Image 1 (cartoon, rainbow, N blue to C red):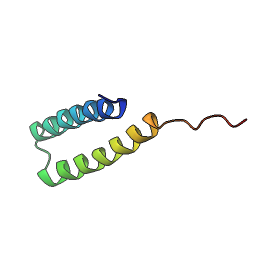
Image 2 (tube, rainbow, N blue to C red):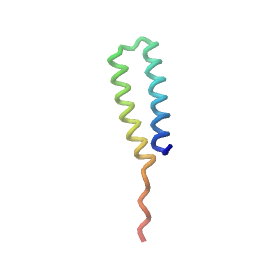
Image 3 (tube, rainbow, N blue to C red):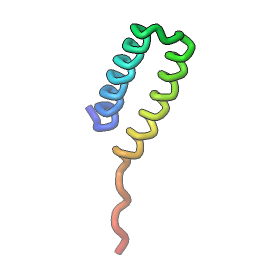
Image 4 (tube, rainbow, N blue to C red):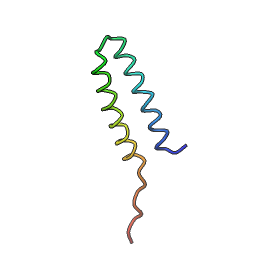
Length: 59
């Protein structure tokens, strides 16, 4: 499994946990969905930036 996939799987576990906690705190479903969408986008952006291959040094 690549580092990108591992990062995203971990991020999705965090998102699911936060969504369940919000549901248990009686947060409206609309806001839970909005939060999940925002966090998925943030997770993709951070996973891409953290696992991006570095450019080789120029000589």
